[in-house]
Length: 148
Image 1: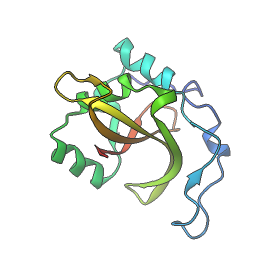
Image 2 (image 1 turned 120 degrees about the vertical axis):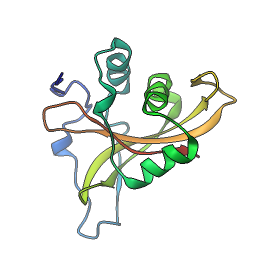
Image 3 (image 1 turned 90 degrees about the horizontal axis):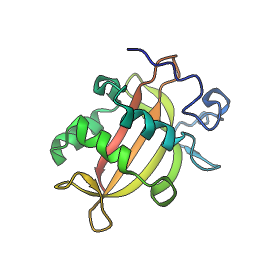
Image 4 (image 1 turned 45 degrees about the horizontal axis):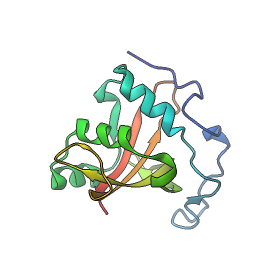
């Protein structure tokens, strides 16, 4: 099932976000608050209409992080659903993904209880960086997910 993102998941038009400078490692931070409507992504994930295959592990480091932490795709989706946008949002930045391209990402730090599979104030602090592809289909590009 292809779900058209139609702007419903972005607070700003991703095409209008100023790109990284000529020196790719300089000025990666994107100012102005969250880029992605976390509550819309969470509603989609709760609806059951999101296919776990649409979660793209967008970096080799992300794949290693998940293996190291023994987290599954479903664990990551549960983390996303449980995040508190106001409390957990950290920053937004341009991130390099597979294919040597940069995507605008939101970065969250959330306390997660891996046993109960939910956000918990005394849980392990988890760093999650993700974006949404803008090619017409909704693909969550998970750039990073690891213990903070």
